[in-house]
Length: 254
Image 1 (spheres, one colour):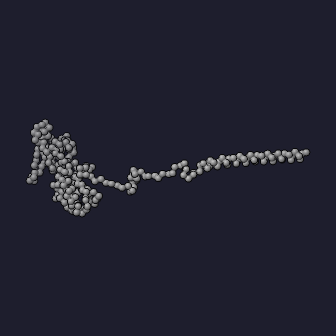
Image 2: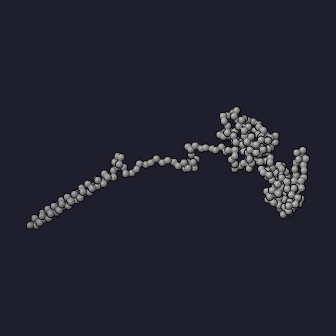
Image 3: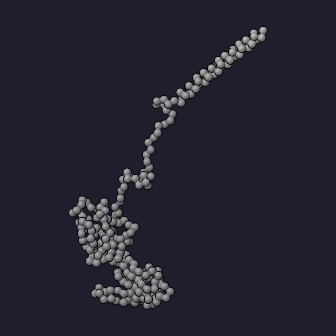
């Protein structure tokens, strides 16, 4: 009787284990079947990809310029005769007459070796590559520009030339003595003695305003001493003293 109960218990245990194993197998199979459609739905099909293709990146022109790239063509604008360069004197190129000591900026389009900044020598000449010596004094920048263009036309095709006055040294005057800013000033426009004093910053405390004088070289080479009484002029007296300053004048404020 004891062995019959033991055998029955073993049979019940085996049957229960088989039933549990069957349920576990069915559950595992169900999970596999549900996972396959999900995986197939995420698989990229040809021509139906949900993710858009990567687009080519076009470099920004501003960033390429900032990084110093050489793949961007660089252009340079030739300054016109009437344009104003940052380092050009305030003169009209069609009326200003070039003089000794002036500094000229000769710019030839796309010809860096020919473009030069030259000074006018005491003999009135300048020297340029491919041309040699050329007279500059007595000409306006526009006239000199035309002569340089004609000379370069023999060496190159259609030269584009611009001549600008970089510094006016021939048309200048000097003021010295008891003023705040003594030195040379350009004569790019008509200037009186009062204007010259204002340009120099005015008088210092111990300036002798009644004993100012102008040293001027006459055409024959003689030197003149012209008196100027500032006290009289500002009161409207003897206004003929307030003459125009001429090139190479020296105004002395004792």
